[in-house]
Each structure stands twice: as structure tokens, then as C-alpha cells.
Image 1: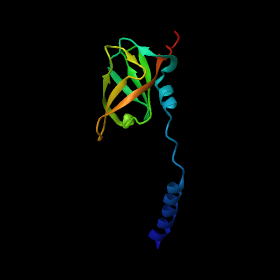
Image 2: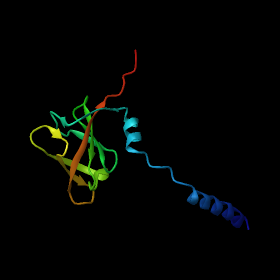
Image 3: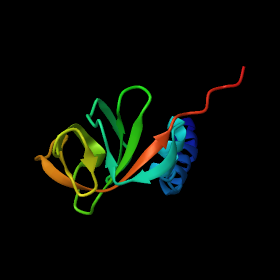
Image 4: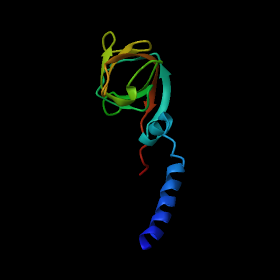
Length: 132
């Protein structure tokens, strides 16, 4: 009898959790804001470009680290598959300048490599340093 009395409240509690709405997935803007970096000027090209490190924000936005003090937000066009699970990125441009409409070769986890067209480039402003 005691186990039945405990089972009912537990079952009701689990059922309530199953129907509770899930927290919304953070947007790419939320993820960028959480990093401390802020959107800056939109540009057509990024000179001295090489991918040192990157953070995928969602299926079409990527922050590329250009050393420790420079970052750029790359927005890809439609049809860029696997950017949100990317393991490695290769740059398919000319020289060391990334431009709008260049291609990034994306190697997503568990999928075949694909090419993603760069639709927009935006320089990012570093986090503000604390005063004092």
C-alpha cells in the first residue's frame, strides 16, 4: 500500500515534467553576447585571414578567431549543411583574404564535407576591459 501511495505522486510529477515546455535554444545573438564580443562593422573582405580557431553559433553563423585580439562573424548562405556540428573548416579563397562569396569547406561531425558560401562578414569588437 505504501509503495502505491508513493508511486502516484511520482507518476504525476513525471507527467508534469513531460508536458513542461522546454527552454528555448539560445539564438546566435545570445551566444555571441555571452562570449563578450560585440558586433562591429560589416566588411566585404578580411585581410590576413587564416582560421586559427572558430566557434559555430548555429547552422549559418560562425565566429572565426584571427589570433587572440581579432575575430570575425561569418554568415553563410542557405544550404550550408552541418555548420552547427563542424569539426574542421578549410578556406577556399585566393591568398590570405576572405571575401564575401568565397567558399568555406566544412567538415561536420558524422556527415560528408560540404562547401558553404560566405554571405556576410562582420568584424567583432573585443570584450570591454574592466576599469581600474
